[in-house]
Amino acid sequence: MLPDRKMYALLTRPQNKSGVKPLPVVIIGNGPSGICLSYLLSGYIPYFKRDSLHPHPILQRKLEEAPDVSILDQDLEYLSEGLEGRSQSPVALLFDTLQRPDTDFGGTAESVLTWWHETDRAIPHLVLGRNAPGGAWHSIEGSMVTLSKGEWMGLPDLPFKDWLKQKRRGLRNNRATAEDIAQYYQCYVMKKGLQKNFRCGTVVTSVRKVSAESISSHAQKHLQENSNSPWNFNENSTEVFQVDGFFKTAKGDKESFSIYAENVVLATGTYDSPTWLGVKGENLSYVHHKLSALEEAVKNGSIGIMSDPVLIVGAGLTAADAILFAHYCSIPVIHVFRRRVSDPGLIFNQLPKMMYPEYHRVHQMMKEQSAACAGPYECYVSLAEHHVLSLGKDKKCILQDKNGYQKVYKISMALVLTGSNPNLSFLPNNGLDLATDSDQPVNPKRNPIVVDPFTYECSLEKGLYALGPLAGDNFVRFVQGGALAVASSLLKKANKNPP
Image (cartoon, rainbow, N blue to C red):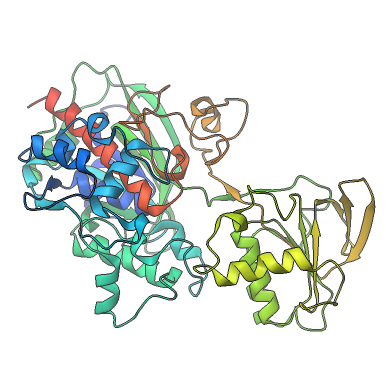
């Protein structure tokens, strides 16, 4: 979807002299978090189905107390109290258990939610994203399968399984391919009529607070003519957000824009910046930080059966995918990782063997293989509790074990697959001031952005929200709870400022 030029003409030209009144909401990122939030802000309101019976008796009783009040308008803290599950976020657990009441216990109970499209409650917003709707799912190799069950990848009121049946396809061992997920998210935006809010192919370069005094009313007038929203700009606000960036025109040129917004939602995910080791030689041409580099090398014939080993660094699922791909292509591998194979924090020790047989296979390889091209797994070497010291121009890598002993290997290429971090360079100080530890980069597992657990508004910057991995929610089934919290917060703000 190309940018809507009429909308950009009204909202995205820098207008320092006359200014423009802000949009109520700008969402940065068009992955599952941004899509779900756009759905809620477009006036799709969840209610408890009167004839439903939730398996959680206390939650059932609470839901029955106000059946005519939408979930968005209720006290989310009260509803989520006492819920337990695989997320640390109470609202994520609440929304997940409303949509999939007993899924963690193997049940198949239907959602207890019904959705009403109340257009008068829609809040005008824009969703900005680099790719098509679905975000990073479009950059993942299409045949890769999801870690989560396929049915958990679905968004509100369009079950993924139902969509897949319409395509006459099924799940693989209860999991979905990245290609199907990416197509599903694009289709979701179209089916729910959200595309008018999406501006794909946009890159945000700056988000900052500016004075609201110079902002005029002509853009707000346009919004009111095209929406029945009850939202009214808070005339008492002294500052608003200015979102700057650029998009590519049909001719391939870059055109800059500036949007003013009263609220900004960060939903960029964490796949923008692969983590680097910070060792000598890591910037050499044969060193890569994405699995796609290995796939491309095999495709163009630069790596093959007779090549020197490929060095794979990391002990996560992306590293496992690279090992499986190399093993399938009979390419020798040296696998280096810092942890013990038995470390309970290792992802492989947390996955059910029956549901993830391919990752269990990699785990077995990591346990059993410590001699090159010997044993049950040909041409795979597992080097636990090792780390890379340096990478040379002659394609020799120096490794060191936990006792300080060094080893030298000749390799054909190196894949550093040790995770990724969000790119928040468009925020002041790269967003460090918003994180738990302001001295360290934002990281979804170790250093997320600090948010209110029931609104997802940043604790240190009012009007700024963070969703998904940025706030510590790393699975699609749980990022939707964050969208519920943000939508609830924004609707309550709107109600405080009626027209």
